[in-house]
Image 1: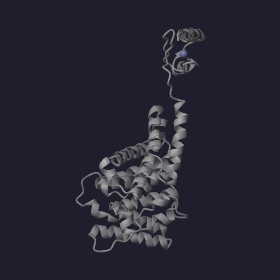
Image 2: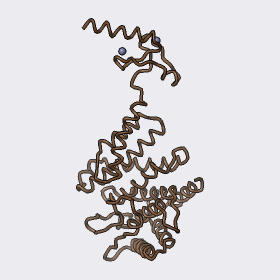
Image 3: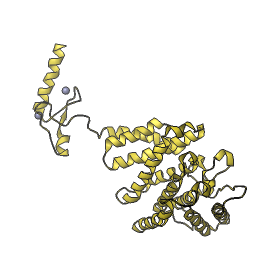
Length: 326
Ligand SMILES: [Zn+2]
Ligand SMILES: [Zn+2]
């Protein structure tokens, strides 16, 4: 795990100069195949309908652009096409190498594909390695985030986020992978803000709106998991409620998460004390959590607690008085 994280550090740092600082090239024209509209260009590099099920199919399903392209673009396009043909002739090692090259040239699509490669692994060539997968997904996110949000390829974004979310739910451990965990959460917060921008939503067609909903469900679920491991149950409930509010989008995994969020809310609500941890009769206020749990909750009103049988009896008597008065 350590070496994987180091690899991530190297990967992110190596690319830092290219990603974080203003670069002389225009990223909008650098990798157009990453961001073109699906309906216009035919098959793009994202296979959003299946989310990330079969990476063999989705990874190398690249689109070719017609017409003359700027040098860097044609270089990236050539690399992606070569990667595709190497993959179809089962030379996966070479294919991965070419994708790595395209990634260093700033192709979000290539980075996302590498994420899928390491996520699922390729038989006898690439062992599944979730931290490398997460690193490449994060890199793809960074590259996507560099272009104006109205030019985002939501299909590609959904693949990246769905892949990341699976790693958060099934592989990563908050205590062991905290660095990569939190940088993913920060990146997702940026994406979440952009996808809530009314100006952006206004221009969504139906299909894009569905993709954006699926993306947001995946991300809010990850935010919920994070708060949950921090024992910030109120926050966790808030994020799971976001999942519920965003609702179903016709993407299987995201829809499953909406349902899971519902049971998470139920589970967590029992952990959040809704009763003030002070004795209603004598004002005793326990400081230790273990003493707070010892408080007796009034079974009649369920809104107050008492420190002892005696104090509870005193309080119950007030219920009787109220009852006779009314
Ligand atoms: Zn008391
Ligand atoms: Zn009561």
